[in-house]
Image 1 (tube, rainbow, N blue to C red):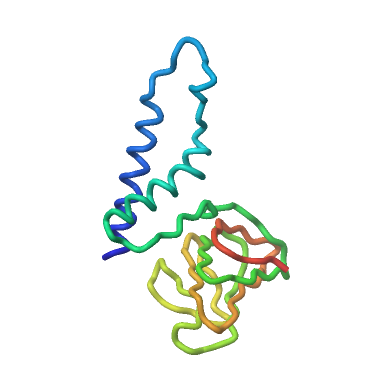
Image 2 (image 1 turned 90 degrees about the vertical axis):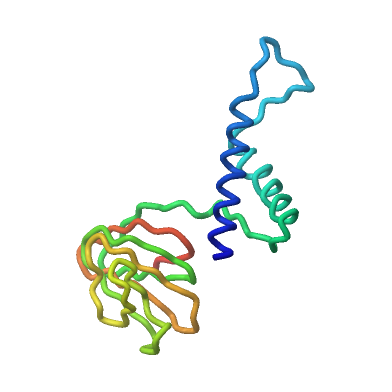
Length: 160
């Protein structure tokens, strides 16, 4: 519940900040005391500062705002192994791939968010499903078994 409230507050502050920046009228002549502000500056510098101030005023603990949350489309050849980090999320878009884990304990597998089940070694990935690797002591991998496999992925991972 608190996370939902935090996300709502962050979204509202972001929207207000963007509206404010966009609605500032541009003057006909440029002055040194009237610098141009880019959207990347607003997102990377101002947004975290404003969000932190708003949350502090509301009495909510700090929130980590990451800019590394974009999805990336990647493909890998047969025999490639994805080493999934904690909080890695991937969408399987085709080819051939299976899950490999170092544990069979509940909570140590890879979660198929599309069906709400946890899977362990040997389970083939299904087209269009979203897979999530949560933090645990077990190692979690995706082995590419087809000639090539395609993914949309975000979070921490390595390919070997």
